[in-house]
Length: 107
Length: 119
Image (cartoon, rainbow over all chains, first blue to last red; front, side):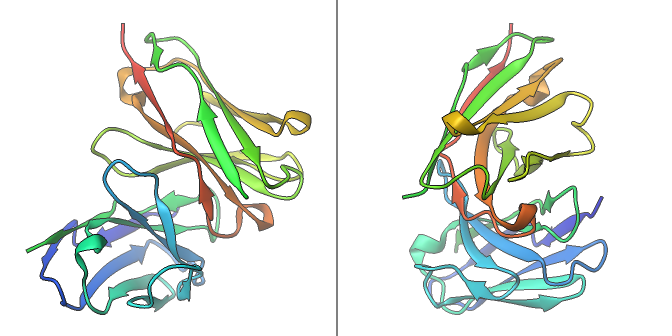
């Protein structure tokens, strides 16, 4: 099975900061990676699909990049409503797997 | 519009079988795949399994021996059955949709259903 490792587990940042979240796969996943945002008490929501494609309705401050085994979610200017846990997810090969998540907090 | 809704018992006894239903609308089960994902309290997301548009299934390696996913396309329903439940199976259970045999993003999610395993 492909293991997905997210870092850091917890990230504290200030409003307006540029924030970078990382996700590393245990083998090449050919950009078959999504990012999901989960706010407290809510279902996960798709942010970025196939590494760098912004889902409809998602603010342009969110962006994704990466290739091979290393992937990044960037928030260009952190807003209070971005407080959430973020998960990466690979669908390159089954069984499909999520990373452990990065909890983003306001400093 | 696309919707998914999970339903099932909120409380299950240890060692018993969990049965959940995902009722979908706004799309066809013969055109899209449906996945089950769960989340124990305070923990991360765990992919459980998929039923594809053609009816084939795949499961999380750790759950494979206990888990079964099936569907009734005429009722637009997908079913999850998992046996030998333990307290560690206490979680919110979500159903979610994808295209292309599962090789794509999970674009719509249900609200989730909380299942507690306790005597």
